[in-house]
Length: 430
Image (cartoon, rainbow, N blue to C red; front, side):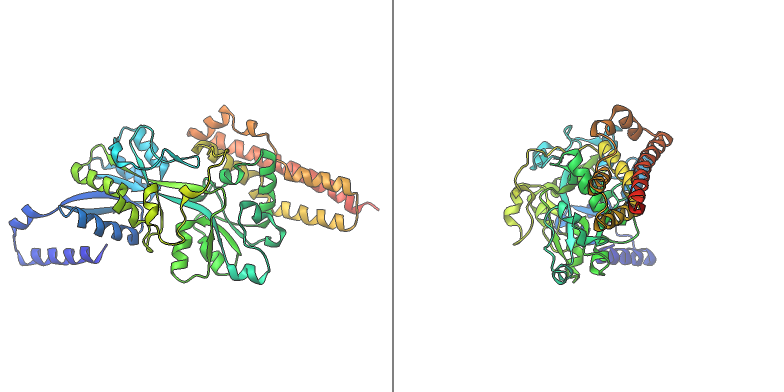
């Protein structure tokens, strides 16, 4: 609640307590617009002030709901909310399917259809992207300087052995902002090359589960030299004094936030004004302010960006910019966790023993072959993304999904155990 809201609340209580009835105020009061969002107060305050300055006839009323609670609330309280504005694409997709949204005015939308393969706006026109967040790397420059290591520039750089245990890695299947991470890391690589990189990265990873800690805290506290996180999280930490630096790799996983008008919006004109405002030059340029620091979706406003501000539209296009859809990303993330993350300790032990066997000059050809077994994906790409697996991950068949994930895990365990047995024979042979 802003200070203005607090003062208004106090004044209202005084009026009621004194029994004052000022009907004239009611007739001239600004019409409210109810906006549901999960954005923090710092951002909402900026938009509230700017919106009400441009549209003094309207008053912003904010209903804060996390994405996990928003759908339930909207379904249970029809006709209460005017605008839904938040970074949760799946919720917008579901609301559009339910017929709960009304179409936006196409003239408001200045962004392209997609950004480096990431779909920005609903092709049917029911919701539009208002800002973009980028997933990249936050580093502790002093730690890299002290270790005499070059700063990472690409995802591949996180595989170097010197970073063992030093990569704070959000689990994509458990942390919403990281859902597109594995897909981005694999982009531009063959299935085999990509899985080799992910396996070596797993050896270095300090995996972070949802709610356990902030990635930026892990890096600033010295528990990791580099972390994978959203740009605005890093910007917030840096603004508060953390000695960190943010790096966008050549392939960035982008996460769009959207705005939509509810079909049963009780204050339709006010709702349209606010939705249009978020997409307008004024609303877009607000994203540059230090308290917000997000990426505008309108390419034109980057002409006004502060010095050094990242422009996603300035990065060159790549021939391999296809972004997997949500279902495929969910399959990929579950497969990554079942076959690599779950067996991290065993994998680390196997690679230590491989290095020891090499040190002893034991059967080099066989050792190299064993290493290649560990680095290759368990399944061909086409066998992972089948129609059957798509149905399992799209439907409510949780038991079928769990059984499939367990099957992947057992398959990985069998391979790793086979390598361990062969390696044990090599190490114990005379």
